[in-house]
Every structure is written in structure tokens, then in C-alpha cells.
Image (cartoon, rainbow, N blue to C red; front, side, top):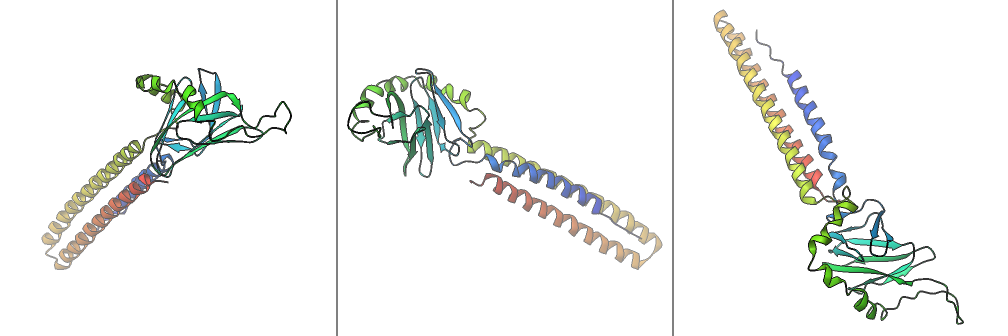
Length: 269
């Protein structure tokens, strides 16, 4: 009689797919709206003034370039980039974004419905929400809309220096937050590679199962003919068809799982 047991091989196949699925899901947490994503508070230091500023966790942008006395942020629609100064310095910029402040810090929030390149030059000569020294009331916000307009002309003067020297500008980016910036292209590439490995493994397993099924069927059929038993021949054929269908179903399910895991891995959060 012919008995075909494909369950151990199917268990190995599903076990491999389960491990690969967990590897796929690990990629999901790396996705972000922009290529420069900050999952936690990150300190930026401007070496020209020796001052530190904090990029608030959850901020994202297309790119962030840190220079000696300023930093350049490229933002697109749907992105928000927030930075604070514990010294409450005013954030002068070339796009007219206003700074706010409270008793502990000053804050600049960048957001736009279109792509903008914002050059931010903190003015260490202007402290926001500071107490006044003369008559006429206590401290207040020094920031007004006209004030940033003349100030950037002197503060942003170094900006043309940044433009002809992009190599100097790009260098600080990986040294400040190398582990926090991961491009979406890299995420898709990794997910694609893992999916292809899963599909290849599933196909190899299917081919092995099919080969083993055919070999066992030939042996059973040969024995049935030798015994001149029609019932054994019919049983061998039935078992062969069932085993072949089971192997194919497992293969199709593995392909579907690999594709679904790939889509989940590259999905934007």
C-alpha cells in the first residue's frame, strides 16, 4: 500500500515562513514620512557659537544639514520639524517662521503645504521672554514680525558661503544622528530582499515536496502493478493527487504571506 506523509515537511516550511515574517515586521518601525526622522529628542551643536539646540522627538523632514553657525532644513507637505533653545535665543530664518517662548525655552516649528528650504540662524544676541531692565512693565516676547526681516540680512549673510561648499555642509549630517536617519529607499530595498528570499525558499520547498511525492508514487504504483491490485493502484493515484494538491496549496499560501509581509514592511506610518 502507498502512504504519503507530507506534514513534517510542511511544518518545516511554515516554521521558516514564521521566522521570516517576524524579520519583515521588524522593518516596520523604521519607516518615517521624511528621510530625516527623529524618534526622540536629539541635540544639535553649532560649533561657531558653541551653543546647543534640541530637535524635538517626532520631528521629520526631507533633510537636515548642520553648519558652523546655522542649519538648513528641507521640509515637504505633511512634515513638521520642531527645535528648541534652552537659552531662549531667537530663531532667525529666511522663510518668515516665527519663534515662540515660555519661561524655560524658545521654540521654532516648521511646517508647510509645499516643499521649502529653511535656513535657520539662531541669534544669540536676542533672548526671548526675558525680563526688561527699565520702566514700562516686566518681560515680554521680544519677537515681532518686522524684527526678523532686517536681522537675517546680517545673520543670514553666511548663507551664501554654505551654497558654494555643499561638501562641507553635508559632512556633519551622519556624525550627529547616524542611527536616526534611514531613507525610505533603503527600507524598501531591505524588504524586497527579504521577500525574495522567502519566495525562493518556498519554491525550493515546493519542488522538494513535489519530487518526493512523485518518487513515492512511482514506487507505490510499481508495487501495485506487481501485485496486480487495482485497488492499490487507485489508492496510490488518489494519494498522489492529494499530496500534490497539498504541496501546491502550501506553496501558494507561502507566496501570499511573503507578499503581504512585504507590503506591511514598506507601508508608511
